[in-house]
Length: 233
Image 1 (cartoon, helix red, strand yellow):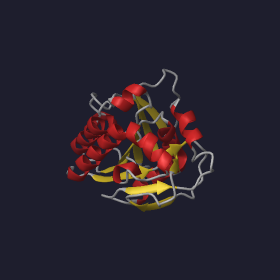
Image 2 (spheres, rainbow, N blue to C red):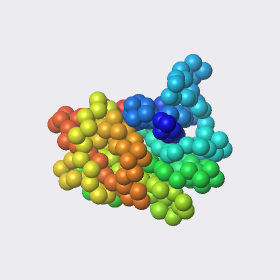
Image 3 (tube, helix red, strand yellow):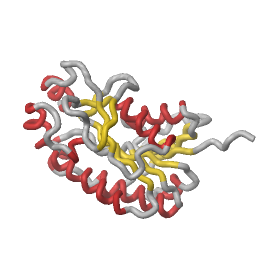
Image 4 (cartoon, helix red, strand yellow):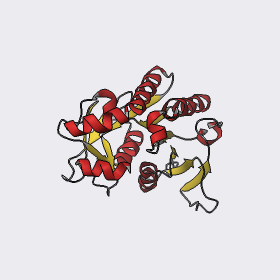
């Protein structure tokens, strides 16, 4: 008898990392419930991917999670002046709502996105520390609170992946995984590599109860102040 197909719920599935995670999970043979705040009416379901609209901050998520084998949260905030100054509690309240639904439905395995800068505010070159870090301090503080909440959550086998400064480039698979902080001298993490790592964590039972960091060396241009300027505009 063939093994039963496993089901993975992915929140934030329309985002850059989330969409890549959906593709990775499908390639690994998962049935995917792809959840986003609001999908267009013509979002195409397939044999292995179904689309579901939900607000992680306020909706009852238990029906979406019930019967799944694992959950990935790829939720994230868009960069704007409003979210930088006063970010909504997406990482704290949104993740807490996901955890509560998992506890209600007895689904244990969860992988979420945090950031290496939660652990190491001194990561990266000086120009990055004096520009990007102060601007994003409120978001990183919220991620730190999310990690603390996960550490206290009962019956949840969680992983909080800590990427560096995210980069929208094709998948490589040659990323470096380290404990808690990215390797000194590295700065960036590709969305597609992060997605692959999140799916590997839930598929292979890696880094349960841990905060692994992930990054790789990128081009001089992609690690420059010009890249920061272009990506935050």
